[in-house]
Image (cartoon, rainbow, N blue to C red; front, side, top):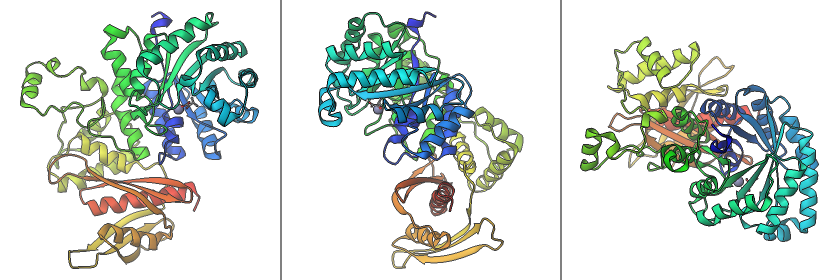
Length: 509
Ligand code: KIV
Ligand code: ZN
């Protein structure tokens, strides 16, 4: 494979993605996502912005130490000395490290945000990149607001960064303003204008404000970009970044057109998407390309008939290649531990004995309530059972009195870590779920602000499990909790307690 055919996938789920409102993940969740990104086969993972907070620093450091596979670990830094040193410190244990440093270059940013002249910007780029080069294996430079930067100045910027030692020059469409033809031409003009790139490659980083992030990235690839920055499920600032799964599948499905290779193991795409949506609490729209619930659902009779006769009549991708198992092997009450463990493994989970035992018990409890248990149910209970934090509070029971003429009342029993006896409290509420949350507040002493609550059925059917995701604000951070049960009030209680446990873990309460 000639290097001009290989497009490098730079994942920024843990940096730009995590930066998006309400997306924050704790360190264990970030590490889980990082391991999954490594299994997916990304070339570079941007683990965070170390100067931004101690939490970000620790996350980058932990990922750099623990994820020692194929992926280069990157940390973001402004071109300031302090940022660069902090990024280098966080990346010190990485198998291969990259400092990704940036400075804005558009007229509008230089004038209003930086208050710098072009020469000052060039000097700062040179200084920052050359310093970063002494502290990491590789340096990437991004001219922020690149798509709105004047071409002539951009060419000077790129030459300066390469001169100072950057091996990747990433052109961001920071505000999602570009259009595909224009952005493609911009990339081509930069490449031609710079001339000798001295071995450095061009990359792009597109935001989705106009819904064009993937199209712009593809257009850049056609015009010579060899790296694309993207995030799983397209999460990121505002409308997000180019979605990794869409970019990769466009390149692979239309290899006849693009003629490019990527190093992604597509069978891990679905699991990665699930991991990111459950750790961030951001559920996907049903019609989301590639990984949405309906992405491979054929409703029209004509389409169904066509797919049954020959799949390629209406399906351009094989869901199995994305790790989506549509055959949905059904397990039930009489299925044994062996069949259960086997299926869990096929679904891509690697559980230790303790987690497997917990998940199997949960499966048996569910089988008493639900006749047929399919892959979606299994995924939901396994993800629900594997908590990434110690559970200070565990739901023991819940009792609800409610009705159109009753004041909703909830009684909650909690097992509290280090306390022998079950603790019980009751509360009234505006509705049964509000009453549950108030009773939990009384027992935990943690009163967050409920920022969002969502409920979704894991599968179809009356006996489907409900999956609840809550976002609880506490101090200046939000904590996502998730709970699954056939009883939606119980699922709500579990989700709320899960968020409270995260607060206790993160804030050492
Ligand atoms: O959108 C942007 O410009 C960025 C840079 C830091 C690459 O995220
Ligand atoms: Zn960005």
